[in-house]
Image 1 (tube, helix red, strand yellow):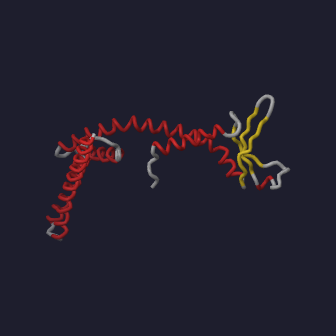
Image 2 (spheres, rainbow, N blue to C red):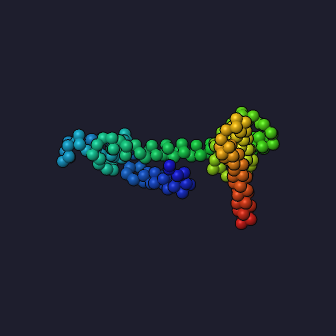
Image 3 (cartoon, helix red, strand yellow):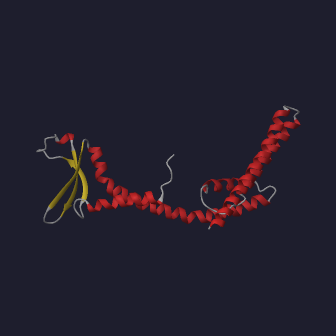
Length: 207
């Protein structure tokens, strides 16, 4: 899985794309085409990428590179404009994500508190909490009750399964395992929440 693009990497890509504006002809447009017939290489076997500037009085060309096939030449010719367009889109999406993350975290915290305080918040509320928790994974935010509320629901489901199995007088080992799993689910969520709180407190003390 590709790691998230850091600000430094983004700025380096941006700088390399902008540096292309200093090459070739100011105001020119990169384009790809076959080499002329005077070349020692047959035109159908080599394609040149040029920086071309058309004016009312002249047509100026600055050769940039030669490629063995048209597809590579076209890719290289369009790369500067394509990358510039993609960088603009990445900036737009980053801004939009930042705008949405804050309200999403606040909504998660409010819904988590509701689910945690209610004995039976219902599957719709728990399902919504699960989805919004998944959507905000990795977003820095104060600790909330989302993980514990979801873990408590999971543990309740497991306990009910254990009780159902126990009522049938079947496999005692399986019943005991389910009860242990239910207890462990809640314990793990509480331990994780405590670790997050401790880490946040330590980070705050260092500031």
